[in-house]
Image 1 (cartoon, rainbow, N blue to C red):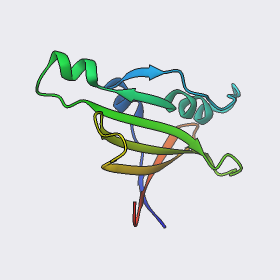
Image 2 (image 1 turned 60 degrees about the vertical axis):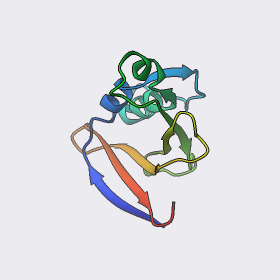
Image 3 (image 1 turned 180 degrees about the horizontal axis):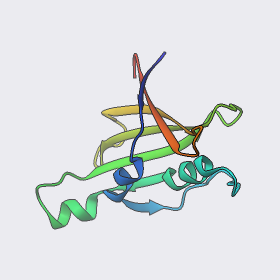
Image 4 (image 1 turned 45 degrees about the vertical axis):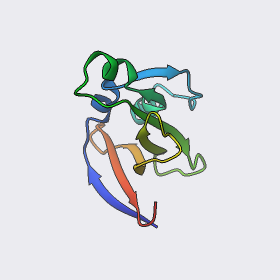
Length: 117
């Protein structure tokens, strides 16, 4: 079961903390859907190994953001998993993000937690 935590977020700022390590497969983006464009930019596998190597105050973190539930029409859904880079099989954070366009054209991200991740 998912529990919603609704926020307007600057999720792309999170992505700025990570360097892209692989070219992800992305959903098709239409120019009239800004939420699809943002969700497509968020998708991928990222890590902070280079930053952690350069600055010992940072940890090497791995982040994966992949599309889920493509059949849903209520937004673009992403599964997000965060783990220490050396133990990616042991994530310490798992979330589902719903990215959609609001009434005024803003892009909204809702973050859902899992009751039992």
